[in-house]
Image (cartoon, rainbow, N blue to C red; front, side, top):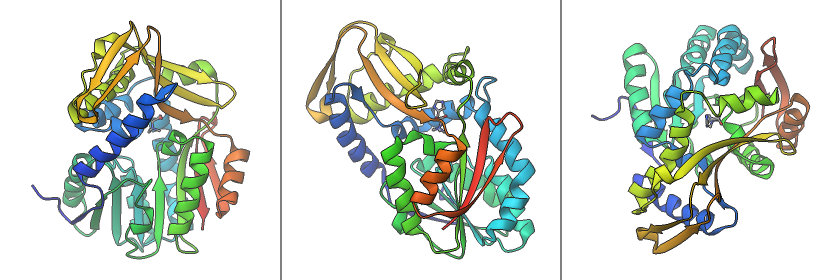
Length: 323
Ligand code: AVJ
């Protein structure tokens, strides 16, 4: 079924496969081996991520929801936006709180969800179209590492990047990303970030290594994506999930550890890679933030007037900055 509202595809399934092919060739040939996390989110991966957001150990989603419940109104009034554009919208579940507040503030016309996952996007749009017949929906299948300058501007925008997705970039990657967001924005438009904050190591590691093993399955699903998209022959049972706190960089690093030496063929890449026993593949960075450094990174990228909302435990923050 076609998505209700309009759907723009800047990234086709074939484009996504191509960029996976390039990144997999580079990352799996490197030492240490790595793979970017955006390829986690096939149908199964998106479902597993939704399951992660409901885990008792995974506090970011519920803390962010509580902050939005409490402060969406202030954020909406302060942003004065006609358009909510959400990067990495996924299921658009928490977005409803922002949409409600923006509608109440009186100027909202349009919601623009942007995601690499066409299936997550169309599903979210179908649900929203039924709930909010008055809201114009313009979905965009895109990779925000490539397509920021091509995103629609059907009015004054609030651009949201929730879920601490910014934490997937390392510091230089963030700098590049924030600069290109700023370049794609009109003066006066707002950027809303959800940021997970530095806290007790035990709590951080537990959030990425849950007792039920859902995060492990999510991580291992990356190997299934490679098998299916690139004709690889990874034996996922031969790898173990690892979540580690990197103290110097203040980030969680998710890795897959080869339990034995392994030889993996990636047919479509004409590539054979070898793992030693115990060798690690880095699959995701999840950087955690501090108020002072986040503020200076935003200022350096050209944002001003940052406002900050946090919970009493200071586990998580919402930041609204103006271009
Ligand atoms: C939404 C991508 C930021 O890093 O916390 C959750 C993804 N990975 N558990 C995060 C994730 C493992 C999540 N991001």
